[in-house]
Structure formats: structure tokens, C-alpha cells
Image (cartoon, rainbow, N blue to C red; front, side, top):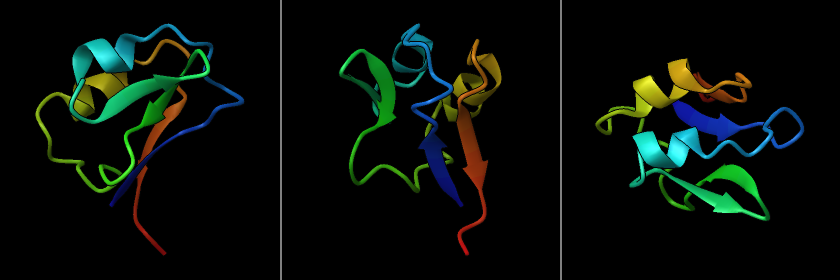
Length: 64
């Protein structure tokens, strides 16, 4: 499983950082996954960040 943030869909609310600061950060005003944390789908509050993203820019998907 892999976490990603679509930079074209994100509008920079920062909710992901507030919900899961060990996995998300802000880069150039938009949410992003901290390098090396892309597979931390079981980290506390990641699912909450995914479900609470106001722009639905965060996805968790199977790696291909």
C-alpha cells in the first residue's frame, strides 16, 4: 500500500499535517507525503487524514 497526495487536487488546507504530522508535510503551500513515509499507511491517524482531506487529494492504493 502506498500513500500519495495529488498536487493538482490539493488546495493546501494543511489538514493532513495536523492529523498525521509524522507522515505529511507542506511543500510549496501544498500537502505532501514526507519522503520515506509513503508506505506508512498504518501510522496513527493516516486513515483519518485520508478521509478528512477537504479536497480528497490523498489516496492510499496498492502498489503495482
